[in-house]
Image (cartoon, rainbow, N blue to C red; front, top):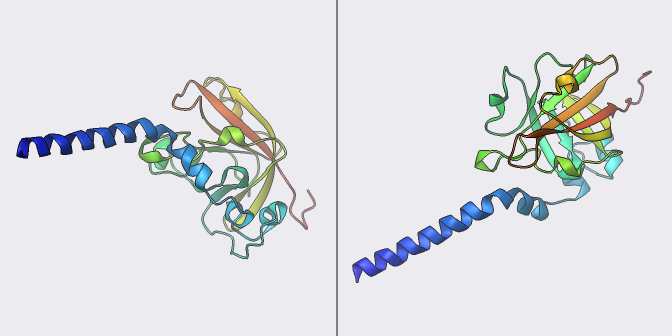
Length: 198
């Protein structure tokens, strides 16, 4: 009797574990379907981005460096460091030696598409379309961008990280999902803030 109970319990554990392993690659998609897609959740900080998507949020801008992409509900810190390992627990990474919103040039932000522990910052980056807006919050200031291009490139095309004379934001991740075969690249141009002469 005890052996039968043990076998039944073990069978249930194996079935549950098998279901989890089978479903885990799809958890980011399921989470996306279940997310609150209201403007206030998609653009949670008061400012130009919130205004552009109809958010009535009055929350103060974050003081940490952060990227917010309303169309895919991304609101993640932008971390600094010598290698991509700085985002092993999630978040995004600004490539060293690239620009930043304050000083200009080509600001390059990288994130995982799908990674262990269900870290999937840019799982839905393929849903970001030209004309959509996003923001970088950098040193307490909001920088608003409009997406101009979405493309897939080979990993050897490192020119996407090259310095540029004009200010721009380059975001990329691996593609197809669950591989590092190519890179999915989003390019966005800054939208001047009120009072800017640029």
